[in-house]
Image 1 (tube, rainbow, N blue to C red):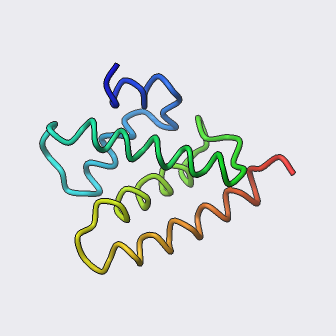
Image 2 (tube, rainbow, N blue to C red):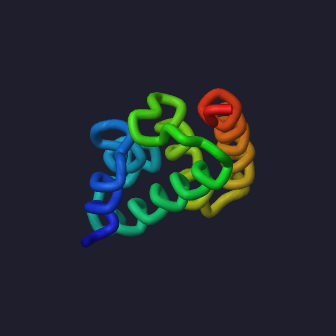
Length: 101
């Protein structure tokens, strides 16, 4: 099973999440799909560890979190740190509103 298959099989929170992330990163080739799928899975794992229960079907905030996480981990400039801080803010919002607490 490829990384792309795992993302769609394990609960893509919106149709075409991989495509949305590729657009956000300005990636047009499929050579990076597996790596990007692994980044998406790592984001979902991080959200679960933070206590976010609703990832699949989690809506625009989960999609935004995945995009920011990908930008933070795919950035080769100082912007990566900024994207990581933005991701942490979205993760905290999701944790507070989506943890079931």
